[in-house]
Image (cartoon, rainbow, N blue to C red; front, side):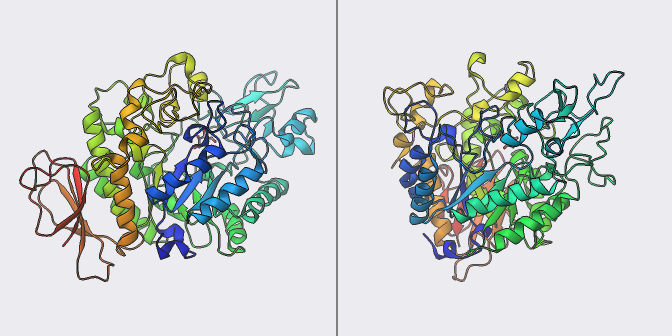
Length: 553
Ligand code: NOJ
């Protein structure tokens, strides 16, 4: 592990590997991943060379939204294991030189959380109800929701309780939004931060960080679409409200009390780069996911302008950019890039946005490998979602009766949602569940496609041109080359249809260059040594279409 990881500002350059615990590795044999499974795969993660892992929610949960509905923030979901196992995982990860970030879900709790259950049991107007967002409805008899806000998963954002009041849920009805104006809510979450910081975790990924504060007048949207236009003057009533920043200033004060200081990464969908950067001011969050990069089509102009806008907006607040190609909420990049890239609708990110378009998966894989090398050469940190290192595509053929995403149910079965990127990982090329669970276990909680054998980790291990070996080599070089990670980028003039940049911070006499060919024809590479290539060069050593190389010159 390189020395940069021992520094307090490890988050400025870290490659963070996202673990979706239900689907990573199952040691108990119930068909659902668990902490013991994660511990058993730490050698895989260490060999991959990641700096940190981020674990999606592992708290007790009724699983209405696969763990993003938390019923107790200071314990471990029994399906996943115990607090003692979590402690052991934290210690073992640290021993392997890997930092550990966990998810916190502060916009909403589960409807089974003790505080929401108490609110339901209490009368309208009671202090218990104040911790959530209960309101009277509209209409002659309270029969209409208090306003026109919609759930992110489809349908109204309000559900009526038996005494006639309505409560707000920007996601599933089983995920009631909490009232961040209330000091007890703030105190609850601060206690949760400390609970886990005290156990040694290195940071939190903050779910829906841009949603906590609302315009508490709860005005109608009247057709207002989010993200807002760049020059929008008014704020959106429930996303990116300015008051949210004060919450994160307080959280930062808490993180900074620890040594080494703990770090935050915000899940912040705001569209506008300057509004995202506002969350990354020096006294707020350390980093945020770069969803503009994730959603950018594989087109030179689009990617270059996202990279430029990201670097400029982050530099303005002194924060490191981060780069991400996938996560548990979006279509896997292999399947996204397998489609025609021109003319995708804005915010296209779910399988449902791509499924109807013709697909060329070999092309998708070629582009994804290329995108991975491009991403890992950019300044700042990067996120790798589990299975990206295996080149997994989206599982597009999950039968309707197996789908579990609330989007599927709340859309009345018209949108498949996100299950296709959440399928349990293939570790071995043989066996009932491709090594996800021990032999003879219950079936995986989502079915694995029958053609994933060749993508299994053990089938790629040691195979020089496999995606697994490509990621390993790239992460190893990132640790060896001073230029990579945090720092700056300088664009170079390459041949037409190429994106070429150097990372000038290196002290050595050689210069690092990253070349990507977006054109149809191969291009001639300059004199120098190819350190790593995302695909085969052609017979003359030229750079083919949709291929990236790292060079030393
Ligand atoms: C974002 C999470 O990544 C997603 O999986 C979840 O459904 C929503 N937030 C609600 O918590």
